[in-house]
Image (cartoon, rainbow, N blue to C red; front, side):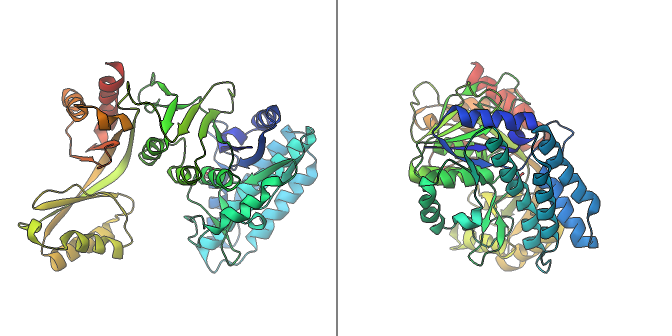
Amino acid sequence: MKVAKFGGSSLASAERIKSVCDIVAADKSRRIVVVSAPGKASAADTKVTDLLIACAKKHLETGSAKAEMKAVVDRYAALQCGLGLSPDILRRIEADLTARLTEDTADPARFIDTMKAAGEDNCAWLVAEAMRQRGIDAHYVHPGEAGMLLSSEFGDARVLEESYAKLGALKDAPGITVFPGFFGVTLEGAVVTLPRGGSDITGAVRAAAVKAELYENFTDVDSVFSADHRVVPDAKPIQVLTYDEMRELSYAGFGVFHDEAIVPAVEAGIPICIRNTHRPEAPGTMVVPKRDHEHCSVVGIASSDGFCSMLVKKYMMNRELGFGRRLLEILEDEGLSYEHTPSGIDNMSVILSESELTSAVEKRVLARVSEELKAESDVERGLALIMIVGEGMRYSVGVAARATGALASAEVNIEMMNQGSSEISMMFGVKSEDKDKAVRSLYAAFFDA
Ligand code: ASP
């Protein structure tokens, strides 16, 4: 049995939904289909999830959101009409949205999640209908009824262990199950969403729960590429990646697959294939436990900006037991999670997401570092992190020399460097304005040489 997940861009128009139906019909083992909410068919479009967030926020602010609600209904109306489905389905979607708007708003995060979940939920309903119209025995299943149990962290939930047994029981459901991604329910029964892009996680959980032979993740590119195409237009496609490489690359900026979706697949040992809805014949990228590293030390270069570095300095820091813990505790108290902590004898840097470290939080943290740790600290903003990834790096000599040499020739100043002890990735912190130049130079050093 295969689990096939289709991303928002694959469901953004009636034509694309028809392709989804064809792909599902072409392989009888595709028994579980997980769908995102309709995404962008063109650059000018807005994702249905973003329309729903706007709708929820307007309702919370003003008690009404007519125009925002119409924008959502219009997207579904275009799909219903383009697919030639009965107008009843649109009436059902409208009624569902109206009902959600009457939910309790006392907890805004919970209310927003109820609205956000409408994107995937109604899309699954509509896709199941489109499949049935084409003679496919498709059945919509609600995640709450199926047992997709999540923690009650609204907007950022985690999958609860007990989900697997419950979802596994659906293995023998008749026909094809069409399952909405991105949301589940808490133990108390409230609708709650995973992090953005979380339908990838739903697909992985469903695949793990039924011990699928393959988890197919359909998106709008032929494969995962070794660097961002917008930066390196001729970046090479990657045929095979390990789970760990994919997780590192996803976390460091490859938007094609959610980094949290790797874990359920790893635990159940299920291979993942990332492939193109518009070119299903293309082989895609396989993500597997192991690969041959011999001729390839670096497989991909990811980058993302929006980071800052907090540099903390204190002489004899190396002799002070518990300094690092106390510093990180201050961040924990402020609800800040950190990315890396490169350190020296008398200094320690903490890399954080810039959006989390607002100026008010920054002020508080710096004051506490000075008062409680008697250390000097400062924040540098506008950083990008570049990550070179590859399990083969473990067995190759000179990777760091090659990388730093490439950055030096491109006149990129390295603000910091970090290599995890697993030696599967190496991180370079550079100024945001140098990000693309840095990626191009590293790409040339590892892939064009
Ligand atoms: N629709 C949600 C989002 O836009 C989840 C997903 O597409 O995976 O983030």
